[in-house]
Image (cartoon, rainbow, N blue to C red; front, side, top):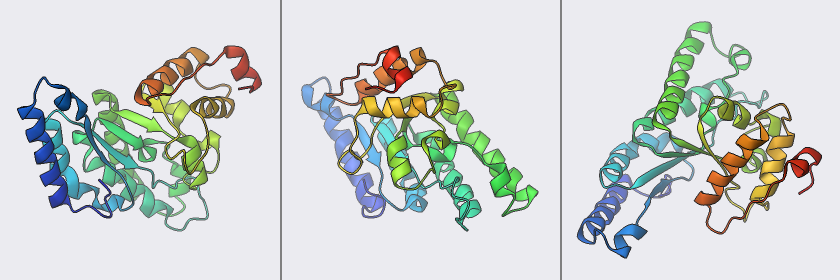
Length: 239
């Protein structure tokens, strides 16, 4: 579903149809082909309107994904930084209990207190921190998958460089991660290249074995993806 184009009422009707199909064809190949729903597109502020859609999908046994990539916390010249941080966190918070997977997940990344204090007071910052800690805790406790797409986030100006992506911080804190390239038709790259870039951006980050583990999990989410990574290639940047 595209948040900016799909009516939540229509989305609810579609989920009801999918649920009915799964029930009527339970145990058949048709039922097994219906996996889940995905909410993406512009208009993150509209996300809360889809909470009932996500809840019904979960009750029907469908996996639920919502994309959140609006978090421009590294752009110091953006006058809307503080408002964007608070809004981005609240958009996730409104549906976090109904999610299995989060696309991009940048609102769960670093909270730049030094940047925020330039724009807001301490009391407002404390409110943002409480909400931020809540969505991170829930994502960890429920094992929600965060699909990381560093190159896409860089090229769409969500982050200022690869080192600024929260991938390594998430990995060190045991978030459930997948690494992807998102819109490959827009950002030509292979998954192997993405792994090399994110590793070289922080050589002191997670261990290579952990990187391989995440890569293998990512390939299972991406049909046809083949990943072969050798430690020597990662160290030298050859791929």
